[in-house]
Image 1 (tube, each protein chain N blue to C red):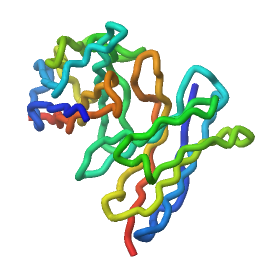
Image 2: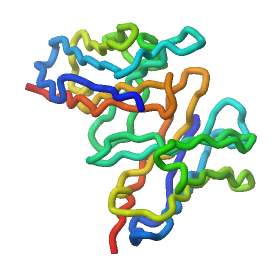
Image 3: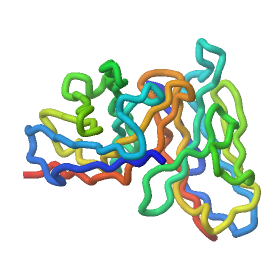
Image 4: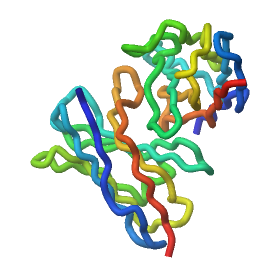
Length: 112
Length: 120
């Protein structure tokens, strides 16, 4: 299985400041169709995961533009330009290129 | 708006079969837009895709669970179900049902989840 490794696992941030999460895969994520299926999810406390970004950098409907995704190959990042209180929770990367699809272990974003 | 809700027993004995149902509202389980998926979350393994099924009946299971898992649909009730046999404590988790888009290759929306504990 493809192993997804996130860092850091805990990310204390000050409101209004930027935050960045890294995600690395044990194999390249370019699919045979040419797309890279690296996705990001947000899980707020007590809630189920919510879609954020698909195919590296495409925000889902309703996701604020302070969230952005980048990367290629096996090295990806999620950035929040200015953290707001509602952003607190755990963020997961997930690869949909290779079966079985796999998730990273999660990065907990908390207020400093 | 598509909504999903898991239901089933919260406690299952070791070696028995875990059975959960997902009720879909706001859309038809016969839709060709989505696959219908199960994912679980545990402190030990994190988020793990169990598998999914398409309206045609095709199923896709995580190889780590393939010998124990079955996903099926009841179109008359707009529901789909998960059965996981020979459970152990390692199967204790929050189980989510959700949709899977094969076009974007990601999951969501998800149900609220149901905690299933395996214990005697």
